[in-house]
Length: 140
Image 1 (tube, one colour):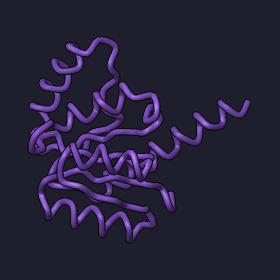
Image 2: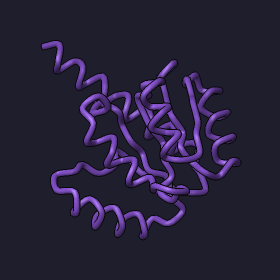
Image 3: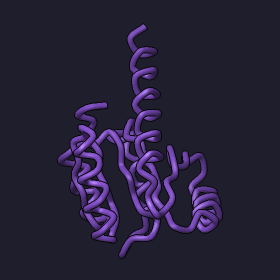
Image 4: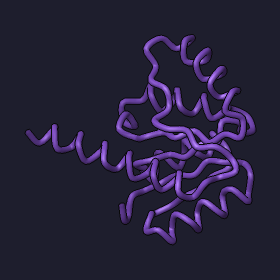
């Protein structure tokens, strides 16, 4: 979807540079940051529709960011996609972490590292489709 606002949160500069350039080349409006503190500030100012967040970040983790977003009604419509090079850790940590936050929804998607460009576009297209369906339901 052209112009969709995406925030990339990753402490690996190569991942940030790659995702930013790739998404901008495909018509997305992209901002990037390297930690959770700056991500929260950027979310407040930028109002992204999708956040692509690494699980392992300096300071607070990507899972902490997910919980913060899910708890804030201002950001309830923001989709969160976790990025990880360790799928089994994400599955275990995410499940156990979210159990400790009763009723907390998990991520809207998961992307592995190394980044698969086709998977990124497929996840964003699916999230855009879901968003359009939700807005259509609200209009009825």
